[in-house]
Length: 465
Image (cartoon, rainbow, N blue to C red):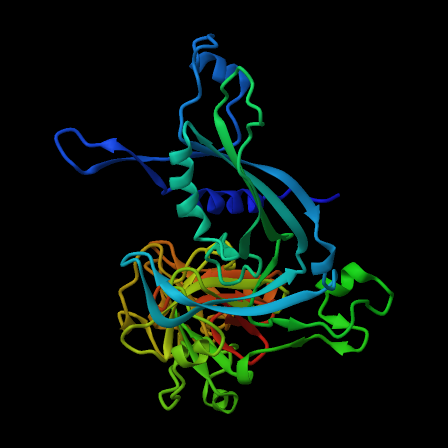
């Protein structure tokens, strides 16, 4: 079913036609106490007054005559113009790149804004015929008005319906086709009607259907096949494994990114070997010798809109961690990454105070004194089942030593240390946040890894401007 659309195309040409005849004047005697001519502007309006409205104006009396001078016009014909017909199925494509607009200063900046592709369909040619009636009360008024009008059409006057440079139908010409000097007949009857001079004009116009506007963006995925091995179309769209191989993901120049806290750095692919893998619990560090600047990378595709543009990080489970971005004003190698809390993994365990090696530190020995509610994630085992080698640094007020394994989470209840998370017995995925580094960790069922921070090779992230 065709959708409704209306763009006031014919109405705009009528408005331009009105402006052509809206500034004429006639001499109406002399000004009071002056020899200067008194000028009266001739009004112009579309169509005649309706019968009811005119009856009210005339106070329901035949003794009232319409005010003169006056001009009225109306459409007397709208015909398909076959000689101007062109290829009906032609589609013209134009690529448009905007300049960035600053709403605060209401000015355009020098940087590139959004980019669009406009597909214009071939318009339909019509010939618009407009009849103009000039109402005058005497021949002198008619002479004055016609002398001003007729000098404009030699043989036509160009008009423009819009100032949009993409509108290829905005230009037209108003051509004077014929003139009927008077509406009176000879001999004149006993009645004395107002004299009307009629001018007939032709306008070759175009009627356009809506254009299709597409916003240019960055390719996130290229699908090689639309169907999977079982011939299922829907599963093939959402599944990364396709009939002809793995779905390919495109990243500009195959660059990688590294998420460092609330910042993201862009890296050349060969530099990621200097970074710790995401499986390590230590905070990811900065690649200081990377000279890639985000404005240069983003500028190849468009303009970054702070707080609106996004980076999306693909996760192993098929989900995406999404956040808005802005260039760090102090170091353009980094983007400030404001993560959308709804897309980040939700913690399933209470937060921990730190990740520690219990053999190298303990309460009061590199760590704060034991206090109720403290929680630590252990990287090494401590103590023994038979308590033959107690870990004295982790002995609580009750004198009971701590026995825990690597990857366990321990908690102090105010009297002793207990194992709150026994890693060897946990097979379900869990999430917990380190309060010291603000890094979120994920328990895979076998080990702790960073949940979304770390390195994303080319193809595992996408930029949405």
